[in-house]
Amino acid sequence: MENTTSESDDPSVTFSDGLASSLRGRRNLFAALVLGKITAMCGLMIATLSRGGFGTLDLVLTASFLITLPWTVIGFWNAVIGFLILRLRRDPVNLVCPAAKESTGDAPIEGKTALLSCIRNEDVEAVARKLSVMLEGLASAGVADRFHLYVLSDSTWKDVVAEEQKIFGRLQDRWRGILAVTYRRRQENPGFKAGNIHDFCERWGHLHDYALVLDADSLMSTDAILRLVRTMQCNPRLGILQHLTVGMPTASPFARVFQFGMRLGMRSYTVGSAWWQGDCGPYWGHNALIRLQPFIEHCHLPKLPGRPPLGGWILSHDQVEAVLMRRAGYEVRVLPDEEGSWEENPPTLIEFIRRDLRWCQGNMQYWRLLAMPGLHPVSRAQLLLAILMFIGSPAWIAFMTLGMLRVGMAEDPSQTFHADTGLLLFGLIMTMVFAPKIATLVDVLASRAKRLAFGGVLRVITGFVTEIVFSTLLAPVVALAHTRFLLGLPFGRAAVWSVQRRTGHRVSLAEGFERLWLQTLFGISAVLWLGLAAPAALIGFFPFLLGSILAVPIATITAEPRLGLMHSRVGLWRIPEESNPSHELRAIQLPTLRSPRPAITSSEPVADAASGR
Image 1 (cartoon, rainbow, N blue to C red):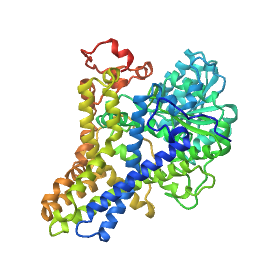
Image 2 (tube, rainbow, N blue to C red):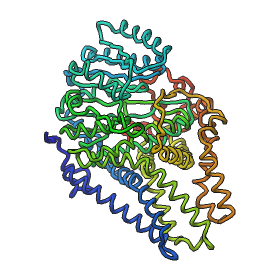
Image 3 (cartoon, one colour):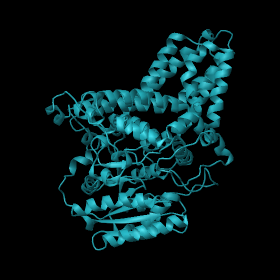
Image 4 (cartoon, rainbow, N blue to C red):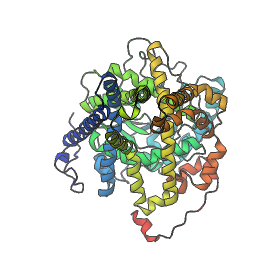
């Protein structure tokens, strides 16, 4: 099946007119930029370590550094390209997702769409509230007869099951004769979420053209849902259309700062990545529309040989389904629009790490899938990058640990590396790491409407600076958690795929220490050893070690809901959904939207706000 979507000859983007005249040209250009940057960075690292010779330890340091580079360099170029598109293109969404051009806002909804709400031991009231809001919107739009809600439960707790039967029974009664609602609970849950959806496909998939996959915390506006459907029905070779999903307003301090940073980095990064990924886009497993016929025929996941944690059912199913859909000749696209698609982020550091370790285990299964026949080269690269996303953590820990040992064991630490190239290397790395956030920050500050949406210039800059500090402290905590987990995987250690705690809750010092004692011990031991062996080197490693030492208080303080409500009132880490909440967000009764927020005032001309510039 050939790709009929054109992505060539866009006169408004002049920075790559020559090579970007085709999707292959874009990919070649991007690969050249990434490989060139990685080569240059490795050259700088070798030059930095070569003072006094280049030995075995230097080679190991360079190899560890190399493993950490792909995600950093790709993120940098995604941000640069995304920023240029956002600033130079009037309609960046249609540039990187040409399929969206063909749909119109008033086209009739012809296909039948199944809404799949996949749940397991969740807060039933909260799930039903979000689903009710979406159903109300579809009914008001006059398209209820084109949709069918399936609540697909894998719940095992008796009290939750009883609550599901009661509440979703009411939902069925409420929408009877207007919009069909089906509640189904599996007695056994092989395959986890992928198995849950596979069961739907076997029972009811043939009755529908599309499926909108929703997690328990998903919420989408009517406009966003209908845009996905209209785009899909206008493009018969579009297999998966992934909507960009943003965090909901929250009273959790941890989630507030985390999703503020994600919001800053996400738009430029996603636009840039969509520019070269094109029809091999991502699928994140929720808030996405799937064409069911090819999904049923081509995206059934194999059961891996061997025992868990690396054998058995594929846990991180979404990206595998995306590459299988592309292998079948269908496009997988991302719609980089921030409007109308939401999720909830983990409310505490402990929950964030727990979720990350589940993803880590699932992504490590991709080693066995890299050799699958017929995959598109970009799809194969995506699987490899998904592995490197977590392998990069132990590589970084090894690099920092060996670097401390190298400096601490030297007779004269100042003679162990070239300071000039070392400083240059450090500056380049920091620039690349934070490039997605810097790019979006500049884009926000350049637009009055965007500045006001984030709470004004002062709040945007304050939020940016404090988020950079926070993410710097958080990095070693998460990296050490990944490293510890990955070292245990070959010995059978596995993540527990249990219910996620989505609501805000406190984390005691005892609980924090129980989960993060290794980070604390690592940080304190390294500071003591460097303080005795090479005190002058402490300044270079201190930001890395400080996050480890403070892991427990960070987990405890950032879990305090009252602190989050205070941040909401003063507007710290505000996101646009708090400044101008949609009908859907107000309807689900979020605590932070019930708290008073200070008005945003500005002396800038009001007329400029309409232009967004």
